[in-house]
Structure formats: structure tokens, C-alpha cells
Image (cartoon, rainbow, N blue to C red; front, side):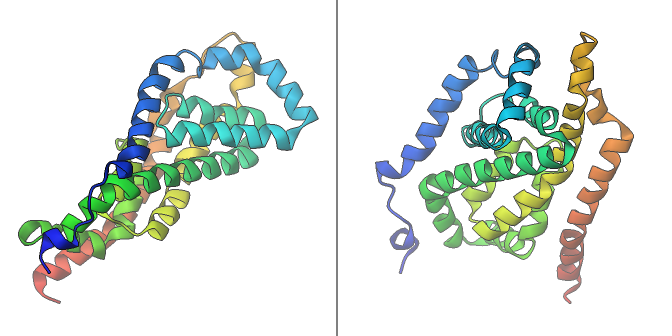
Length: 243
């Protein structure tokens, strides 16, 4: 069977999910860029805290739903939302809610991309030869390590780490596992900053995000990056030595 026979047909309907995400992301970028901000949180803090005290579960569910939508449609405000989780729910509950929402949203955009363009590209990769085939085999051998690196390296945008794996055909279970675990370090940092937002607002200040560049924050994350990269390096060296 030739490669063209094994490649899924690209019916227009398969691209609807990605087109919807793209349209919502473009519109949302203009509509929500001035809404999901620290100033909005400052203005509504008393209302949110009062509602939390009256209906903790309801606010937590609403928070998760909003965060899932932000991630699934790559809308602006994910960092502010993460800190809001810490401000409203504290470090432990806030981190748990942030990780849960971000993971669900990431899975949603992954599946949308996989169902559409990703299925076609995956089939083309499976039928490829030469250098592309070697790259594909290398990815399969180090899939979990590569996915962890995408999550841990601060320079990789979150939406890229959501879309790229879907387009190259990684296993969904590996994507879910590495997403849920790989975003925990960053989630803790953002949530921790959010826990102190109340004091910042009381002083009339603005959150200091320079903490994200401090050595005691970046150091552990870069250490995790090195650990995630070790299996890739070891497998590469073993392949070159032939054992």
C-alpha cells in the first residue's frame, strides 16, 4: 500500500476544531486582553472573596471552567488566572485547581489538533523515510523526556507545548501524564505569588513578577530540565556507540 493510500483524507470538517480555536483566540485576544488583568482582580477582590466564603465549591468550579477555556482557546491571561487561584484558594488548593484546569484545557486543544491536522501529519510521518524517519524514531524512543522538556523549559510557550505534540503523533496518555506533572513546578511558583496578592493590593502596588527570574526559582526548574534531558542524551550516546 502506498503512502497516499494510508494517509487520512483531509475532509473540511476535520479542520473545524482548529479553525474554531483560531477564531476564538484571535477575537479573545482583543476582547479579553484588558479584562483578565491584575487591575480587574483588584477591583473585584471583595466580591470574589465574599462569594468564595459563601460558596467555595461553586467558585472553584467556575474558576476551573474559566481557566480551561483560557487554555483551550489560547486566550491571554493564563498567568493572571494562575495567580488568582492562589489569591482565592491558597497555595495547596490553588495549585491543585490550576494544574487540573490547565491539564484539561491542554488536553482539549491537543485532541482538537490531533483530530484535524494532526491525524494527517502523523500519517505522513509514519510513511516518511530518511532523516524524517530517524527523527520520528528518536522522538518515539524519548517521547516522555521530550514532552517533559517542553513543559519545563520556561522559553517554550504553553500553547506550543500543547499543539506540537498533537501534530507529531505522540501518545495521548503520555501527553496527559507529562502535562499534569510537568506544569506543577511552574504552577506552584505562580500560585505562591498569587497567595501574596492581597498584601500587594493593600499597599496599592503591582505584583512583582521579577521573582520568576530569581535563581532560587529558575534553578530547581532548570535542574528538572536537565533530569528530563538525561535519557535523551544517554539514548543518543548509546545509539552512536552501537549498544
